[in-house]
Image 1: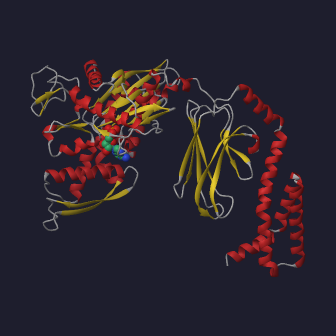
Image 2: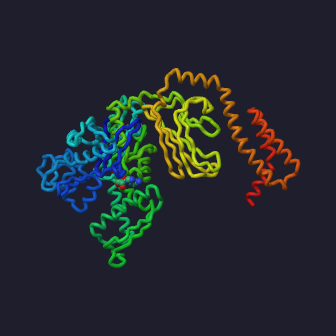
Length: 592
Ligand code: AMP
């Protein structure tokens, strides 16, 4: 198994390709993002991720963040301004009396990711694909590879982030020579890369960006806006940090909400104080307000986009796709500006903050040979579905669907007071459940509900290995059950042929059986309802109308008993017709 790793400036992610799907792995607290922060404790213990982030404010001198900015750099290079060292020598970072190399620090992050994956999978992971920005030079790539090796990985490949993202967006399926722009605006950096697909492999034609432009700058601008609106004076460092975190929260909330009231209790140091406890801030903010202060910052990405296009010798119109990467591209304004720059709507089909990691996982799966199934385009030999009321086959994944695939439907209870459903999984092409093959069956309980009130979602996922997982969930109560069926695709050719021949041979009877069953269900519902209504409204209807309705109902009962489909359908229609006045009166009565 080859893990895929997005080793980011602020956050890192790891995942593997698991039975047909790229899966990001979470730590024991359920977090898939691990902050790229390392803390070297006085007791010799090294902390990584969230725990290290918490130590940053207390012991900045023992805590290292954004080490990606330094990896593979030499003193005097861009980004090394704050650190003392002789010009031209590889950068080292003085921490607790030692000089650490950036690859040593990065290796701690990678070790942490490795342990998250191993804990979650219960097996050792020794091979990995790691992503780096497209603009990383050979020294930076080699240093990243060394960090991986120090962490105990065999680094199978270093992949450019935009290439990984394009893989995650499935763009390797575009036609040859397609051109793609990858707009990546994260927390601290921006880059725009132009890729061209060449025989299934992406080539980076151009890349431009700014290593000091990202969501952090937007947070800063929003914090200034808040301070201005609240007329805050100088704030102590701790309050500034809290204000910045609140600004970030407001910014993220306003990506989906139009307005948001920021509440910050006990923010000390303001000049609108409410006594010695400090200021309790309550500031209403609108999306338009924060967009106004963020816009000039986001507009700075435009020049880089144009430079990249120019370097690649292309115009915006030559691009086949524009994809978004990085958490900051969740902002509607960013999407709007991207559209303005490229005169085309960006592809929004993937989570922008996970695309790079997912692409790394896919690259790992390709190198490990796990993705062959997908390229072979395996298909389902027969339809898969469940049995519904009346013994009918309800298809969920039709025959000849390319796998892996996932599909689902919502079902409800047919009978009042019903307190559970039997999910019977079927395979085959026949209309009646009984003529198909039964793959398995299980119960999903729910609280007794009136007819049609229960809601049970049933989802089928079929992975590339042909393993079918059926999940049923009572959406109100939350009860959930999953069963796994191994043999959903492994059906012998003869059996498939026999099933298809059977479905052709019995096509007419089958259709008749389905129509009869549907009519029977309707009759069984209608007859008691008509009887009850007649009882209720006996006084208000002329005698001959009552007799006519009773005669029509008797005809339905008799057709039902005789199992005659056409007669049943006709008599149901006649009963429907005869009860029009009855239905109207009933409705009027119900409405008072
Ligand atoms: P990344 O480097 O891709 O992890 O992106 C991190 C940046 O994305 C941070 O600046 C976040 O504040 C920002 N971000 C995450 N979610 C949102 C959101 N919903 N709206 C705006 N920015 C977001």
